[in-house]
Length: 219
Image 1 (tube, rainbow, N blue to C red):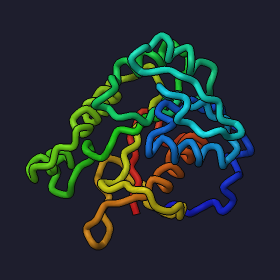
Image 2: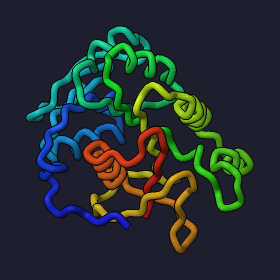
Image 3: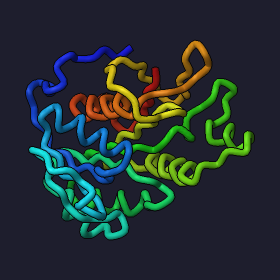
Image 4: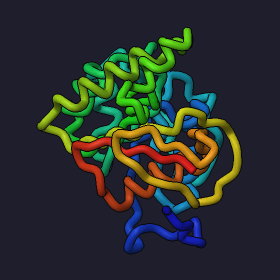
């Protein structure tokens, strides 16, 4: 069980990171942005429409898109790491990887969804949903993005999957961390708040523990 550090403004060993966050205005991206800023990190919010970003100390808005890897690469260059939280049915993982390589930033944290996690019966959660007639538009593309990441050996990537249910909620700082299996609670539910998911992402940014691996978080 992960325990809250208490002081949200503290950073690992006092180190202030420069983070390029692609998708900084999305539901999950906004929580990751706010968590990073609360801990004192410098965030470049990379979005298609900069007017969707708030005005905040240590937040620098930049307009760029995964559809233009050359521009995106220039935009994220010089940062300590890049975090990507986008809808994979609207974005191409190969263009993201192209931009990362162009940028010279070796470290990449990518949100890939829950579909690639294994169920207790060995099936992927994606296949479990298909059998139930559920096919969210992002699921297949997110699964493909994860599989593509697993082939990459020249970047220090980390993939992170949320629980099956991730909604706006509260920041508790208390959750479980897993690897490739869908985490279920005693009631058979798999859930995490967007706020606690953001805690896990920035924890990984500060203290890398899953290089070229995936991790997942849930209550």
